[in-house]
Amino acid sequence: MTFGFERLKRAIGFGVTNPPGPRSGVLGPLSPRDAYELWADDYPPMAHNALMRSEQSVVEPILAHLRPARALDVGTGSGRYIPILESTGARIVIGVDYSLGMLTRGHDKVHRICADACQLPFRRGTFDLINASLMMGDVADLSECLRSMCRVLSSRGHIVYSDFHPSWSQNGWRRTFHLQGGHTCEVAIEPHTIEDHLYALDQAGLHVQAIREPRLSLGNDGHAPSLLAFRRRWGNPPVVVVFHVMREP
Image (tube, rainbow, N blue to C red):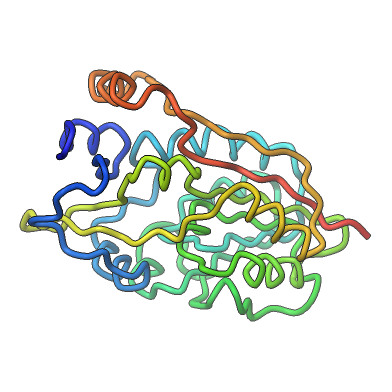
């Protein structure tokens, strides 16, 4: 049975149900590629829910301490991290996404390319910083994706990436969004454990600098009642995992 679906959905920006949960009135689960094409017109170029704000509150300070010359945003979507990467002082910032619909949204469209994260179309060592926000849940083969990123990363370059925390699969949470007209769509998630990430990083030759597991913050954005309802039902589990890794010489 669904527990507080509407309240919890508003709290973190995604539908959350007890497994198995009814799916009446929900389209999907859709592949990420199909879902983003449908979602693109309504997808804001900013952290627009509590989950994304929690993720960005950890990622942005990490990026701020790095001083890249050339930065790549993988899975850039509507480009919310483009201005953040530009603020680091990088003279070149490029965004990559496989959804043409998402690439037409948001910030500076000039330096955004349609491409697959597992087959990045750049020369070896092109970038000294790669950011990838909440896109690993769209990737079946972590090792392939991280090898692709490592290939285009310079020696001693940094990768900062995030994924949906394993708590999502443990609790049976679902990722949903609304279409105009009231339809709700579910986006499929590829579940990854922390061990999956560590194995893939090792296979790619990347060395972990830090791992963070942010929880939802109550904040001051008017969603405190929904977030409190979430905590009463689920406790206060981590909802995102963030990796800061480096390519050694």
